[in-house]
Image 1 (tube, rainbow, N blue to C red):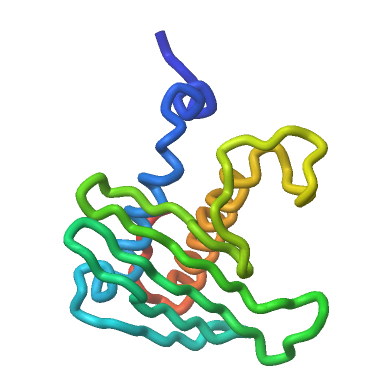
Image 2: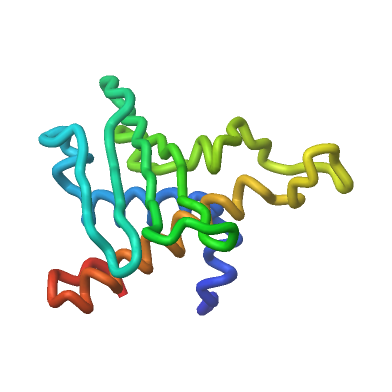
Amino acid sequence: MAHSIRQQRALNPMWLYEHNYATLCALFPDIVMGHENALQYKLEHSSLNIQINEKNKYTLLLQVTEKYADNNVWKRALNMRIRLYTDAKLAEVVSYQGKARFLPKYEMPNPKMYQRDEKCQINHLLYDWLLYLNRFLYRRNEEVIFS
């Protein structure tokens, strides 16, 4: 019996963390393998900084910051910390825009005004952002990672 991608993803909620890990490994292998402690890239309208904050036997903690040249109210710098679990091959956003420790589900309404699935949405943001980076590198005639 054939299943749609949506049905398969509903059965395996870890697909997002696995995909983010694989994409980070493909885009930034020097960081993930530990050959570099920091990287800087110049993108279309911003600059990207990635650095390792913690390095343990089975985990890495990355600090990712994307700053725009014309930093105004509508374009705030992207600032997230991503924990890479190298043994399980998973990537999880542990901090976003200075906020950390997100619960898997929130009751509605809640005092912090989080969405019901705030943690999942933040990891989806990482997924979308990595797709953007991949497409940007493809447009620059560099190697394409995932479609």
